[in-house]
Image (cartoon, rainbow, N blue to C red; front, side):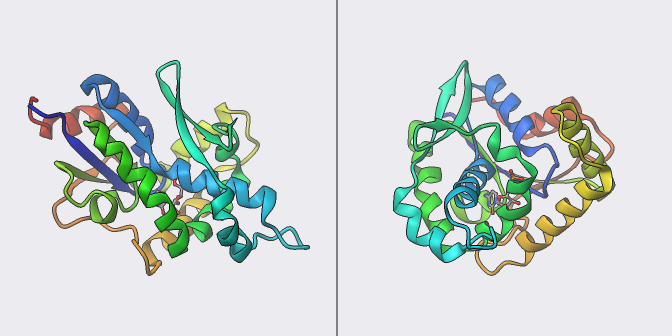
Length: 224
Ligand code: C5P
């Protein structure tokens, strides 16, 4: 039978992407981290579309969309993001990108611009896609939908450890504030807000680890 299309949405730092990546490997699916696309556009904007005070200029960004080519390339079995031919996989995790991405992701023109890239990939077959509006807007007919959450403290702790391991100088409180701010903007925006689809399964991993979360999600997926 056909390989499934799986949508994984949820709050920031619930492990959506790293878990999706592992599930994709186990089930032989393509994984797309849609947050990376919004981060890629934000990275472009911070480089090319700022005003004299170095603040991001959204209008300039929107008029520059035709100059943006974002694509994933398979590097050693992992999809890495390229902006106009340059690998920006590392750069999109910079705190400056995290601090600005939700402002960029609010814009209808930007969301529409990325819609095509996200939907095209499902033409290739089985996919697991993670983001904020995958089950509600991007792939409303997905075979499986999951919505991931965990307590704010636990999410901040995990993200902090990740950033620390990557050599970023930060502290738990700063990380937590970024999560809270992003979740608020993402949940309250008018277009495609972050919310659980009516038919999505809620996965709360506050008290379970990564492997247990993976097993829990896999337990819902029928053999194909
Ligand atoms: O998943 P990640 O935390 O990398 O996403 C970064 C930001 O991109 C989110 O906080 C949100 O503002 C935006 N985003 C979105 N819709 C998606 C995926 C990400 O608005 N499907």
